[in-house]
Image (cartoon, rainbow, N blue to C red):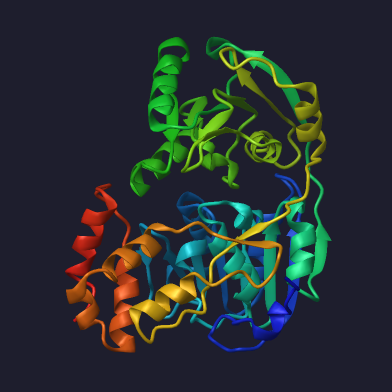
Length: 404
């Protein structure tokens, strides 16, 4: 399938069907100052918006920007928090929550390589193809995305950022022998709590950071670690997405994770992303494993220490040009094939499955007789299954609120 000139049909933030301003891809490993650079560029403009991959990271940068610009100038929009002053000039968001109908001079997306992620990747790809600032657009991330960004975004300019400090492999260590200012990484809530309890018994106080915690609890745990009240942090791989913490050593308590379909071993680039949280600015950092994991392979260590990884071959995609004439046309538009052979259609998400289930309900179909009601149906389908019930039961619940 031939490539297509996405920029010619891109949606600039603010809803205009045009391409505006300069587009920069700022690429490099961890601890290169990419996010700092982007925030400085954002604040140099009269208005701006930035999308982060994590709620905690959005909150961290919101607090930083509020300290400079004042609470009335900055909005925070994530999946769990909304702070909306009357006339904000800067929007700090998670990537999924960015209000792209807002026109801003500068727009930035952090960790753009997540466009290859099977679960969330299609959102990042959509932002790569269509989200634009009127004066400047910034994509921040790993150099592994360079070739695909060049292919999909004609005219993009690249800025390479080297790591400020050295990252060195320190081998495996028992939990009781980990140095102070260590972050231990696990991949489930059970593992996080069990590891934290072991460290508390052996070494003293420990902070815990993972997405399942409430915003207030999560922020308090990070603050406790940053203030030096505890010397150890146990976290999920969420800390790999740019959280700025004074960590000297990162230890992996496991090298595999559940990716939404099945358990799999971490890729070298993922290990580097997490390990790279060790060391701040010009301070060197180390990484390793806990004793139960064993030593890392020499070729993996070499790749992480020297930031050498295979380029991405494919990005995830889902059609965002949806047809709301009726529920069937909406389903067909969601099933549309990617416009480029370097894009792969994302597997059916929960909202897609909910819509397919509701189109089999005669009462829902009867009430979905206008574009507005179909749009409402789609909005309702995107409500997450917070109860974690079976998909058919969740679809029935949605059906009760889907159309008026």
